[in-house]
Amino acid sequence: MTIPTTSKRDKVLSEFGIFQLGIHNFHMQRRRRYKFFQKALIDARQAQGLTQTEVAQRLGKPQSYVSKYESGERRLDVVEFLEICAAVNIEPQIILQEIEKVDGND
Image (tube, rainbow, N blue to C red; front, side, top):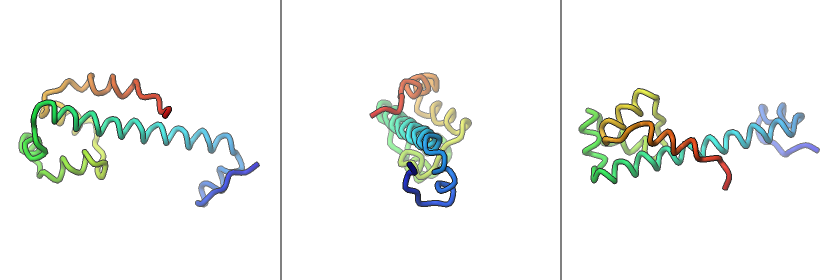
């Protein structure tokens, strides 16, 4: 049984249906964790009573920078994540520990 596909990469993987499903599930879990990460950053900012503009000022960035990472339009690297945690006064470990709890199941 083959799984319907849409891309060249998917057609190659469709020969290995189970493998393809495993990759799909991995990516879904990763997306879910990243959404949770975004929400955790928003919640941390709001818990401190800060606006996007105030966080951006603390970071020396434009407000659009905060808007983009909060909406998922822009991804963060580790250094940026640490800087944001400092700006909103939250320990990075708190957010990371919560993300580890997200198992990807709906």
